Length: 379
Length: 261
Image (cartoon, rainbow over all chains, first blue to last red):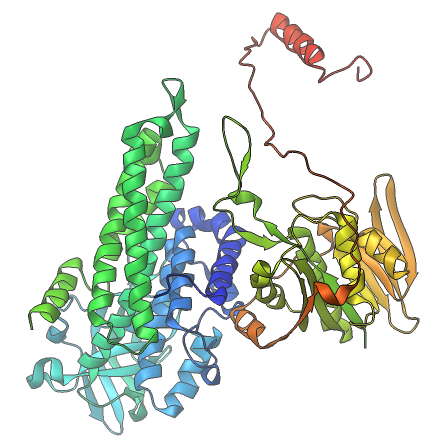
């Protein structure tokens, strides 16, 4: 058993940290406060070969492993959760289904530009009446005159306003429930595709989240991804991998909360000495560090399973469950350590606290994670 | 095509060094290592030449075998090959030893037209290895270089040197050695493909036995302790009397002298 990262993984981490110090840290607060989408950073992510990390070079990817990708998401999120999530959504949710289920032609047409950063991707599963219950989707796709016609609306779709293509899930046979769900590649600018209102979020405020409206949206017949009726499986498999990405995002946020807390506890003097010398603070810091480390190991283990071609569904669920709840706990503690100043907008911990919460919700809530874990144990 | 050698040092990351509060001794227990920041500019300058003039670049370092990790780090930054001059005794070398080892390793082994070093190292900043290496190899040397251009036809380089009292531009025939200042360029952050590609590049190992006689050290480090900064805790008011006493206090501490005024 080897708990050490390879030299390459260590170099990747060092590279991302340097990148963040130079390009992300200086603007992370403004990305949150304005809020604005960090397009200039996304362009630089492409230059670093970070937009298609786990995909083969023949599709424009870096040809690296899942763990490398996870390390990049973690370190970006430590600096700016919006940036980390933008990469996660693009790589896990939009690119993976094409890599795994796409035809060679679809891969050349979409995966190559996605990996090279010529195009960002989005993933549209959720609907107003179909969140966790994805099988309740009411968006429908009908083959009409040699094209697919899509009708319905999706909500909470990340990256949608900047996406060059969106994976859209729609019912091709309503009578079959989840088995009637199919996945489609919908390019930006397709007739009948509209991006609805932007949603004003509590955290990851720079990330663009919008409604995707499909009003007789016409796409070519070959836009079907995988087989008809395979949509639910595609969505679930995609989310399995995505969860490791969200776990990494949560680890990054929690680590940042710990970093900030240690720095502040050493600086802040009360009763004539730094508060770091008080046991009440020391215990909080010790608990934070321990939980962050445990989250990181769960996350890296899930990524490692993925790289080893072992099943990782349960591992991904455990990593996401523990890391996301850890992020919420640690950011809460970080504000407690900071006291009043931690409640003020200019402090990074205030942003971290808001950014952490979503990791317990998207790509499967903590409750769904517990269901999945229990399900795999009690089968 | 130019053959370029770029020298680099694997140093303790100063951000990881802690000091014992009581003894002021430096604690390196959990410290990581990195390529000396000055040398990253040297590597970058060599790679810039490689991109502009089609040069081949060899990165050379002198270190104990435990520093092997530095090679991929260096190679991910663009050099074509690395030369690892290593022996367990190559620890805490003084600049005269490092330059002797480098000279012995390079001579007759690596073809070069130009050697690029960082102006100093992050840990010692003695600024001696570059000039001493040039001296041992019998080639001209320009230090404090902030801009470097290559006159391809005439086989010389033009180096702008940033000196205390101004800028000096020198024309140096090749082969030559330059030591560069951080302002000369912005080192790139290796892309993921560059990181992964580093493992495929060539590494030459050079052992102590292959180097001939290496002189002993001229320097002996007696003790290293952390610099201590104590606050005096003196408060001054903002009125005329306060300003006067602040100025007096600065004189008393030797921060100001009559000469300054």
